[in-house]
Length: 458
Image 1 (spheres, one colour):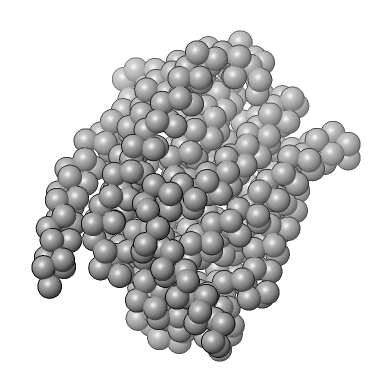
Image 2: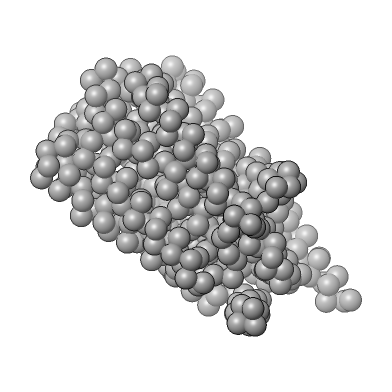
């Protein structure tokens, strides 16, 4: 107990006293690497499956909607508990931190199990619902079967990863994610081509790597490397604790859940133009998840800093951290987007060397390169409000990009502009989301400045 209290005090001092640039970069570095590895192994699936056929490549886009559902639930529980955990640790309340960690972890296993049973029972209609054509369907079924089997450990891994990050233990979170990602990239060609499993091999490779990642992350808690602890005894029976997790985590659920719906609607709009259109938009989406992972990784390095310091009433540090995160994200996004713009055609051919795919994918990629420059403000604003427990604003903003803005656009623009409407829907949605987010950000940064002055005057 004495050692645990000393560890908690040391972590508290680090989070509220270390200079902001040094602290965020130390937390963001492992997180960015983790996000990049995760995106790379998603790209690896796209690359290796793309060697089979255009229909198989389209299946990756269809099943990505299913994975977004798993991520929506995992991020809701992980961010919902993690935000509370970081603020509890900022107040040096380790018992509450352990209660929320245990509650979210065991709930994720339950939710994952329900998704496995329900998804496997309705696999074919589920794949059609997510936008599969009849030629893509067999590949999508094979891929999704293994993803559904691993839904519980995949969901729980997201919870454990977020708890570690919110504690400020980003290095531990990185170990689990990077190991799983590297393993996935190694297993993909073995399962797809070595064992001749085709698209199902990519699904099995992903499932196995996620299970390994889960056990690595779990071991951090079992070996006492964390401030919060997992136990059945700490699992909450209080409805108010579940309400708090779901309320604070709902912005993540909204963001990822709407991403699943958006992906499904994108597939449905694209399938009117054939398998090449589905494969093209799937490829572009995977490429830009790679780019966006940089901004998300830096933002996730910011989240525990915001939560800890808000809980400790260090409002000036919260404001400084937010501004630094936006600036650092803008630099990285500009560099990566520029590389993608100038090498767009070669990048697309790398995943599927099909002229029909390239014709649709290249304009979409370049439109999205421009829109990516807006992401640092969008991501940082949403993560600021979620990290400090402002669930209402965070939920509204998280629903803008893939929901309030994108869904009406993807339902209407293809009817007006045809393929151009499919290519331009997401960039226009990003521009609208930026315009909505910026006033919220500027108003609250001013409020944090006033709160810091009032606290200093006490």
